[in-house]
Image (cartoon, rainbow, N blue to C red):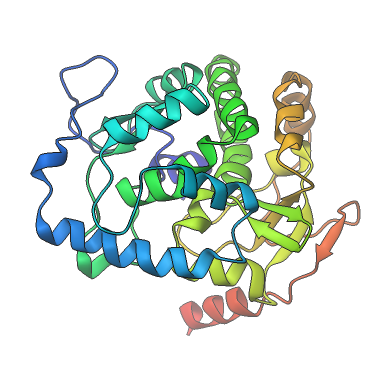
Length: 298
């Protein structure tokens, strides 16, 4: 699976959703139409993640959760979330039927609109879903949108995405999103903490990213990340670490064009590669992925 194909599977590009009538792909959330089973699925997911993330998620994620009208009892109504988000950071959530085209996705982000799937996974698929659902999008992403640094960074990412399309560099920019907004770690006073939505909404990855000896944990450098492929179908082999969330705002001020040019002149890196130029915070032993590969080869 290529990087672009991986992006298409994870919500940064067009998927298999039926095109809605609106040009921006938005649809009503239709909160009143959720079933008791769907609310119960949300409750299971919410309760186990909320319990797990104490001491694992960054302070800003926890603060975002506490400031939102969100609980285990029901799938959140976007209208209530938007009342709070708009006052805090000027963002709002818009419902979409699934994955949306690149230009639509970036246009929403550049205008502080976060596209969220309005559906929730089936009870038999609690731990893995190829297409991001309302739990991933709301539980994973929205608490961090309460933070001004993340709110500004994701808007800048949307603006940068529209530029990257014109430059033919979308795959490299997608890697930045993947290793920050989706699977990023941050240093805090009590050690490494997670802030990426792909981790925060995953029970298994929330444990693996901080506790396992298998993955690498490497200081994030933009040109390094732009060259690094990632895992769409499994746990990550490498997590990139920022010093604080304000570092993302610094990235938003950088002209990415020279970095794209630099990356084009160098070969892509495998997800588990470690370079002599890396600032390695934790060199993984790779045991998890070695075992997976041996199992697939058997």
